[in-house]
Image (tube, rainbow, N blue to C red; front, side, top):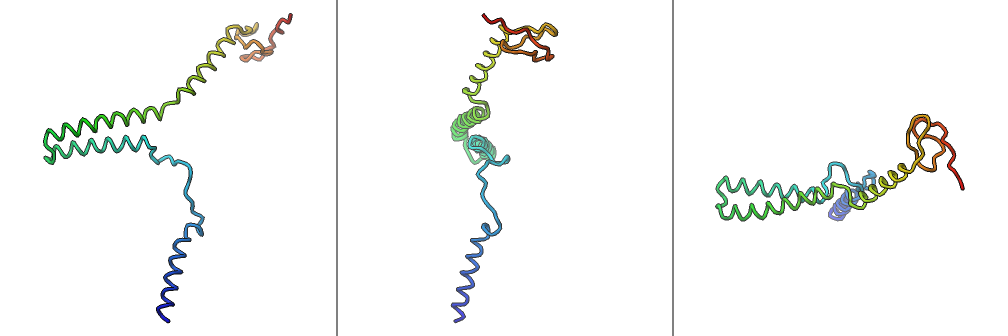
Length: 144
């Protein structure tokens, strides 16, 4: 009888331990935290740490010069690739950059054929009815 009672207590303790996150309302976030590393940042960090370790092993006499040069060459290439991948991940995509450039070009083209304000001289978009700079009414476009 004491054995069954002990088994029930252990089982109950295990169940309560497993249900603890649910009862406390804890959950795993699906969003990336600011202090979390991205895949490219982690790859860069690992490559640089490996390079540091090879340097340390060579200086402490654990590696001979031939092994050191071989490992250093491989790890340097890997670290450079990781650094380039991290830079690419941090820079805006070429699609977004192309969209931005197209929008700027369209705005410039519209401004070149725009309507100058008689009050302040600001060049406004073709379809503007009021000046974007000073708010003065613009002459109505000629319809024909």
